[in-house]
Amino acid sequence: MRHFGHIPPVVREGLFHREPAGFDAASPPGILAAALGATLYSPATRPALADDVMKQAGRGVVSMVLCLEDSIDDAEVAGGEANLVRQFADLDARGGEVPLLFIRVREPGQIPDLVRRLGGSARLLSGFVLPKFTEERGTAFLEALGAAESASDRRLFAMPVLESPELLHLETRADTLAGIARLVDKYRDRVLALRLGVTDFCSAYGLRRTPDMTAYDVQIVAAVIGDVVNVLGRSDGTGFTITGPVWEYFRVQERMFKPQLRRSPFTESRADQLRTTLIEHDLDGLLREIGLDRANGLLGKTCIHPSHVVPVHALSVVSHEEFSDAEDILRPEREGGGVLRSAYTNKMNEVKPHRAWAERTLLRAEAFGVAREDIGFVELLTAGLPG
Image (tube, rainbow, N blue to C red; front, top):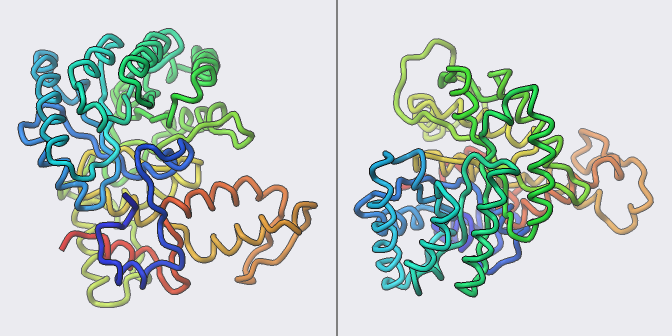
């Protein structure tokens, strides 16, 4: 699979200076973590789940979470598990390419049990999402994952969700983060990415952001995100990929504030129509939050609606300017450091301070591609939208 692989090759050629690289479930963890993109969540109880998975794969989704936790009622768990077994068998029988599939469980014991019940169709499973992750709770989950991995003789990844009250509360945050860091470092080979459960953070204080506001406008949430990146997202080899929080809105809402999308990028008639559509569906706030995610060191995003996928992927593509800067910084002759003017002549690139950024940018370029010099996010959005 590859990002933007659902659009015709001739269209891709017109969009990309360097096209996204192909990858699959057996690819190195580093590229898989960078390539997760918009991870689409779906309740595990959906009767036509196999059809849903194939439909979304055809629309450019490359990672999905099939949820047995908060998205379904407590009384539906057993039925959800049985449905997953049926739907995985259906997908396996079809033989087509599927996204990276993860199951979000509630308890550690579900992991080996589900892998056993899936049987041969477990080959389609990339791993598990571990809820309310702390050092105390996480140990049992990761041990269960190791047991399932050994029994099935296949690689399975963990994606812990950082959403516990202990992480949010100031008096316990530092100790909780330190404990999580110890545990995920111990199981580094199995931890693909860390996910942020911002809805649970808000719930602890009875908060809910409106579609006019990003997670970063809620100060208590922004503080936690900053501390998580501080401890777990470092570029010194100890850090992990941390994904952006969920955007909850996908229907028209009454607006209190002005739209957040400037008109200037949307100059042509079709682009102006696209701008109107994005605003009507409250996706202008999503676009702003994606930009803030990246500025704060997050990559990829939890999504609960298919309409969020294309914006996440379009804004993950590396611009030609970013790529040019990153390549200049990482040239072998620059290893000694120094300062140079960018090829775009609009900034100074400091080789040593910007090196980690450049390395991260080239990894994102491998996963999402590099746009042509005259291509912006509007063209990428337009090309990626269905129909």
